[in-house]
Amino acid sequence: MTKYALVTGANKGIGYEVVRQLAERGYDVFLGARNEEFGQKAVDSLGLSNVTFVQLDITDSQSIQESVRTIEGITEHLDLLINNAGIALDFNIQPSEVKVEMLRDIFDVNFFGTFQMMQAYLPLLKKAEGSKMVNVTTDMASQTMFANGDVHPLNVLGYNSSKTAVNSLTLSFSKELGSEGPEVMGVTPGFTSTELNGNAPGGKTTAQGAEVIVKYALSETNYHGKILNNDGIIPW
Ligand SMILES: NC(=O)c1ccc[n+]([C@@H]2O[C@H](COP(=O)([O-])OP(=O)(O)OC[C@H]3O[C@@H](n4cnc5c(N)ncnc54)[C@H](OP(=O)(O)O)[C@@H]3O)[C@@H](O)[C@H]2O)c1
Picture 1 (cartoon, rainbow, N blue to C red):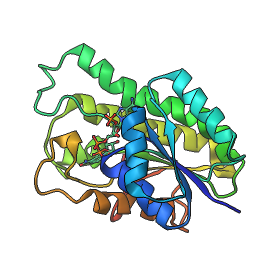
Picture 2: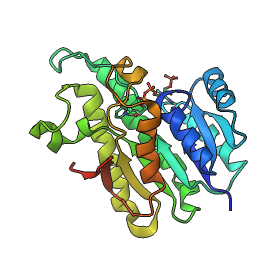
Picture 3: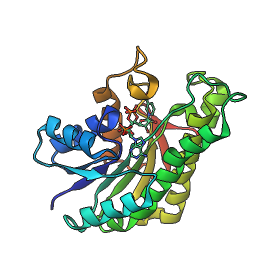
């Protein structure tokens, strides 16, 4: 049976490479992008016949519902949902200086957007045996690692706390779903040079970042209710 995957925020960066790697492993992949032109260009540049563009702005309920209908027109099940879309607006702004409007904008995408995607796609995921939902997170969102100084010391309140809230989504949905499936996990690609961080030097390539996500998405080991980096399970 054909395996289907959906990746959000996949017109560039890590998501684009996740699409490529899943498609190369035989998945039929829906490349989600909020901008139709950029999304279609990304599909064209991949040049893979098993990749299809889906318009998807994760802050827009209507766009999400339309994407569900589009995908339901093609398949009755979804094997993988990679909630990759994310923004970071407050790098270089101290917690005491960040504006509440900026915090709301970050949470709108990273937390509320991911939440709406999880709810909207559960029915399609439940129709596939062994399906998985991967919420892309960061190790800086681990309160334990941040408190202990085990991560980059960037004190980015908006981005980090929105991803901590995403980790809560991972845990809460995993508790509700129990062993029934889909498997829900959080994965951090690790520091990767992308537009998100102004292409900061010294990070992984997008292909290397994507490999971490794909490794867990395709793993035979069950990581339900866990958050992970390349080396394994990390603390909350
Ligand atoms: N880079 C790192 O070091 C790093 C480390 C840990 C975790 N992560 C996480 O990895 C994920 C991918 O980030 P990246 O580094 O590849 O960043 P990126 O290159 O900036 O890509 C982010 C993607 O998310 C999309 N997006 C933003 N808002 C959206 C919305 N409302 N609806 C749909 N798509 C939206 C962007 O679309 P547009 O092009 O239209 O803006 C873009 O395709 C993020 O969740 C990020 O937090 C990154």
